[in-house]
Amino acid sequence: MAKIKNLPENTLERLIIYFKVLDLLEKNKIEAISSEELAKRCGINPAQLRKDLSFVGNLGTKGVGYSVKSLKYNLKKFLGITQEWNLILGGITPLAEYLLQNKALSKAGFYFMAAFDRKEANIGKIINGVSVYSLDQLDYVFKAVKVDIGVITEEETPEIYLEAFLKHNLKAILNLSSVPFFVEDDKIQIENFSFEMSLTKLSFFLKHLA
Amino acid sequence: MAKIKNLPENTLERLIIYFKVLDLLEKNKIEAISSEELAKRCGINPAQLRKDLSFVGNLGTKGVGYSVKSLKYNLKKFLGITQEWNLILGGITPLAEYLLQNKALSKAGFYFMAAFDRKEANIGKIINGVSVYSLDQLDYVFKAVKVDIGVITEEETPEIYLEAFLKHNLKAILNLSSVPFFVEDDKIQIENFSFEMSLTKLSFFLKHLA
Image (tube, rainbow over all chains, first blue to last red; front, top):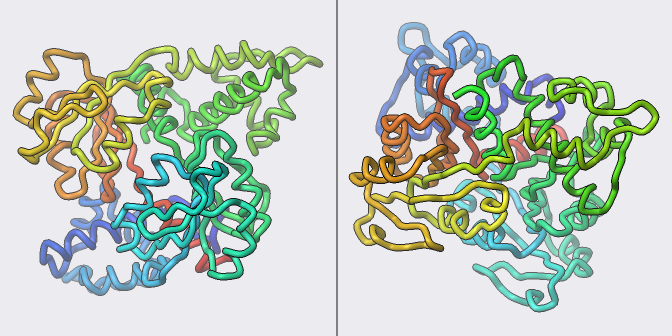
């Protein structure tokens, strides 16, 4: 991941973690928390947490700690979670169908607007309210809606979706196929994830250390 | 992720990427590749690639490059992909059902041996050949089969599965719930992933840079 305005990727990941933990604390009706306690809950040392939160603006009060509600709100704003984001899907796979049914994503502000597939039989289907188009119809979809993020789930020819999405000026891609993609362009952000790679990392750990 | 015998986590991730790309090259009947070309396909600079591969043992031949087949084989052995790994699942969710049906994982050597759930109605179900047990039956399952990796997919009480799995001495956890887990124990490895966190990272990039 490219450096975002001097914010290191690891800091960004930790900020998202703080947000998730604060969300949980708020649900459990906890109103204030010290940096030590919050750091402990997040598995991070307190100095690191304070340093990370300085990117967002220093919001703690000495002796009282952080207000859960206001720190959560500030993180939410900083991370862009208050906004809504439009997604398109590349490939109708079991994973795509899972994502289309996933209520947590729309609750978090991520909405699938369209899906694309290369199999004739899938074109025209509607899955949980989302229409499936052929790749020929990309122009039409990009004209009809603002698209923010492309999600690729197809395993056979994921590069076809990547190329088509980048050609239409998409700047953010979540690639869930098992082969990772890289582009040498700071203006484009690709996140690569596969279950297989995560499990391979764990099995490597077991083989060599545990 | 803890440092594995001086192998940095980033190097490990890149080694897995090289393996996946070599696998693709082999499928496309490419027999040899230079470090420059392989590095380019992986989006990495050649010096870094050569440095990474030195962990595995230097296998290239000057002027010829790497044999795709033998480099793939050596990486496979180094990464532990030649082995088979037994998995258990915590929580019967749509994501769990997706994973249980996923043929790519078993093809890569990852086999689900059992699943656990807290809902009475799910206990005793068999999903794609995998039985669903209650958490009371963990002892029984751990006695019956060797378990390597625990995969947590439940959103409501993921910590209950984490605690139960660690109590039974599991050393490797893939946590797919949206709240990440951390433990201060070098002998335990937890990978945290959620679609929501990945999409939040991308939306942050869009908000601040694109």
